[in-house]
Amino acid sequence: MRFYKLIVLILMGVMVHNHSVWSKENRAFVVIDGKKSIDDILPKLTNGAGQAKLEKNDVYKDDDDGKAALLVVGSGGDGQKFNPNMPDWQIDVVKNPKEKNEFRYITFAWKKKGGTGIQLQLHWTTNSWGHRYHSGENEKNWNPSIQLDKKPPKDWKVYTRDLVEDWDEGVMTGIAFTAWSLDHGIWDHVVFHQQKDDPLAPQAVQPAEKLSLTWGRLRKPDPRYWLNREQN
Image (cartoon, rainbow, N blue to C red; front, side, top):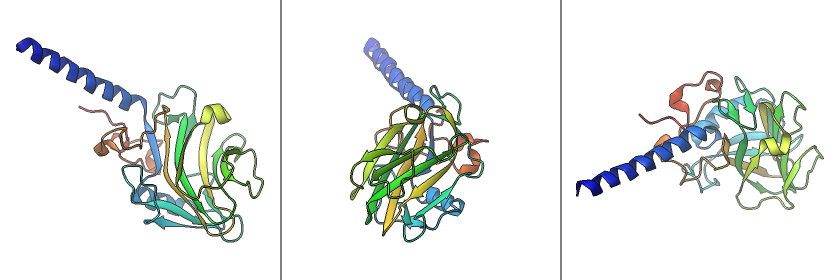
């Protein structure tokens, strides 16, 4: 009997160890996933003719939060909200991320009502805004941009992209949420992470471990705000 108990304890230890290793290796920086993150980013999107606000009803349900998203009204002008230099935000995009400010992948969900296209733009210290993704038409012909779907998403769609494969290595400093013309675009579930697995998927880690990192803590991180915090 003692032998079987020992085997069970060893197997439990292996399972816990494997989960801990996954958590350590797939660090994540949450941009949008919950009301707190929206409240944090709204005052920092200081540029663009669009109107940005918290959306509570039409949100991406397939994550742990499912309660808040960022909505940008694209009426007039450039139809976007952005900041090329987010306060204290310096993300190193590298092939083999190890440090807490190093990432390789981005996962995001979006939806578009009206118009013919939607776009997400990333600002780097090299090639400025030359790192874009869009679905539907590239309404203002802002390139380079990778088209993810031929039609704009009428329902929520989620993507995970390899930033190194798409754009090479670099330093990211800003972001733009571009709804373009007519009505609005909505973004949710936006996160940078080190490994390909989506760290905000419900099955990824326990909800208690999913803590958003605020903008000001990226360069001087507080361990309490890391999604992958280590277990004692």
